[in-house]
Length: 346
Image (cartoon, rainbow, N blue to C red; front, side, top):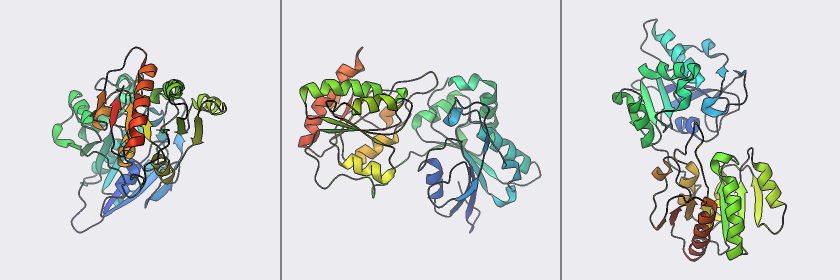
């Protein structure tokens, strides 16, 4: 993603309506020699010129890359002011808009803007690709200039869907280790941290069930839950019972997450696939590892690109919560005795 010789790279980012903070847009803004303008509903984090934007969204049900939403005002942006236009996921409808905007500009004989699409997608047969508006967005990317994959599986998925390997690059995300680092003195308390959306696909219900079993063996064990989502009521109900050992801390910013991880002995999630999603990488795993924590999780999708089983490893049994509880109990005990990260997958 080169800038013109001697110039600053000028990028226009077209956000999803539900774009999460401190992720892809933030990483683009950290590239040296880059000035980023972003069309977004909410003000972005970082050094980004914000273009406050609204979306035409007839249905609210679908979120993130699957959102049935088109950004307003893209046609009003001057292509001559941008070297690149970038967006997230091939099938997102804003990516389709960016493709049309780029083609219209270059049909007038200019070489720019170039187009980059970032993707985490790891399902070669993604069901959304069969739905007309998403399929059209996908096909609009076939003549993009750069397809930037966040995981190896995303490259495999692109090749399986007939994309040109010459356009594909894999650049895996990192972690700010100035922010995420081990505690000076690891905790002696049996505290388990869950940092993720409180949704079925992230398995908070399984974690709550497993925690009840953990506390039979380690009664003083506690679970601290950070996040928001549709299953928040389950966590809140559990936290209201003083016998549960569960605490809901709500949504945290990045420094808050880092503090939570440094206060814990173990990090856990229990993701499960849905009809159109499976775990891709899991930035929370990287943050937990950078914080020196053992990890207990389920095998799901391609999370093994982030979590490499080294000590205790087993396949998901018919009753994953019971197996996870045993693994968590063992890992809590290990985590209390050693700051060295271990990894357990259930």
